[in-house]
Image (cartoon, rainbow, N blue to C red; front, side, top):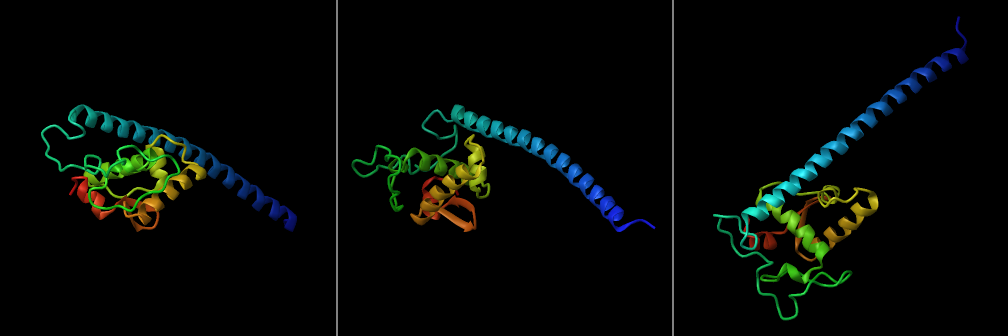
Length: 178
């Protein structure tokens, strides 16, 4: 009859083997995820480049009619320059140009406007970080989340599902997307 200690050692050894196997599988999946994220990033860059090539007239895709976006609207005097970093985000209102926002905020709006125009769903801040070529580490994701939440509070973005951001109704309508 096996001893209790012997049985415990057998169970411990089986559990250790299972943990080692799962760690190997997690490492394989992590490597595969890194490759897939890189491929995703390359396709996003390619799409933006093709859009730039096809849109020589300030962002309008060749042969496609679009309504003027917030970037094209006449901003109030002094709003043509981008806001300084750490500046406040103004409340969104009809005709307010994206140029009143700092570059980081404009970048978020542009990414979500592209998604809206292509009828793709909202993005998480982790997906935004990857899209921007940033490491999706907690500090970076939280910095993006803070900016996105500020844009939601000021009416530029909507968060219909927790943690998933899209353009708000007003800015989406002005972007020319339907």
